[in-house]
Image (cartoon, helix red, strand yellow):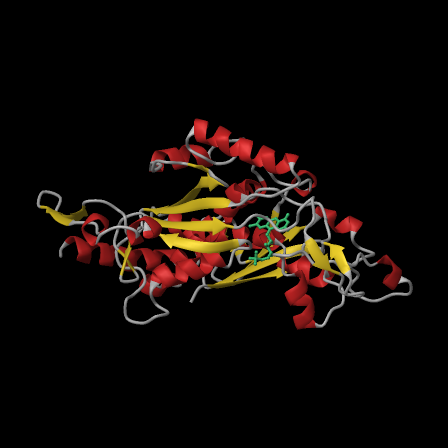
Length: 390
Ligand SMILES: Cc1cc2nc3c(=O)[nH]c(=O)nc-3n(C[C@H](O)[C@H](O)[C@H](O)COP(=O)(O)O)c2cc1C
């Protein structure tokens, strides 16, 4: 079983990801992990913090001589901002520490501040927002880079792009080659494959900046080269569409998920939605008329690209704060404002890639197993042969 966990707080010492269950022998490049971390930090509409942090992964276990060794992989990413928070968030209480706290008592509507404070019995939302913050996803992206390294050995790639920022929307499908080109860019604006749409998206973000507001959007994650047969129809928790949906909605501010063309499909007739089945005798394989199902039928991958979309609400920290009530005095108060992002759709897409890669890697190892990459490859190749002889 491949499993992963993250630890760390937004302004704490560091973020940590651990990943257990990767076979030995997967080639790992720290630079490739750092590239993913960099991509997560980009995008037009990010707050000032991204300018002070350039995330770097320190792999402290599980990888030696550029290959996994089968033991748990632990990755550490230091928070450069920690130096400004050592007094406010000390591990051990010392004399005078109380005065150096940076309390947040005016909970932000839409953030975890109020629900978390009531649940954990804090009269200051600081510890809640420290962990609820999407800074945590830095660790997910690092773990996701490991999952991507496994999948790449089997020619499976996972990428993303932005479909909408507020009302500005891409009205056509993106090709795989466009996504590859997008992922190689050294400057990331809004990760849209169409330049004209991207400039309309930028105008929407500019409007949010001007008015002290925030804006959400939609990203799409595409997994290319996925074999038929990952996940299973046999039980509610083995259906891969459900597992992917959970992974995507677990991303901070993602409130909806779509597998394939779900929303469009729900508004029309079956004859227009299902992907027709054909057989190519020369290539001795089944083909499909389209990919509206997003590569999943019955919770099983069907060999087409896996398409999953995440719907992001607008960020809840507004420069023009919303009405709230003070946790201490219970009096009406404007919500707290701390340096914040205005739009994060491209970054959420990169996090979505990591989550999809992790879920696919889990399902892949459930099916093919193996303690070493050589063993996993042998199992995989046997299955591919079996399918080709069907
Ligand atoms: C990449 C990314 C960056 C984010 N940055 C911020 C931010 O700067 N300020 C903010 O209030 N929320 C931000 N969020 C969203 C909050 O973390 C999220 O709304 C909060 O944890 C409450 O969770 P929920 O919206 O999923 O219910 C960000 C989300 C993502 C995916």
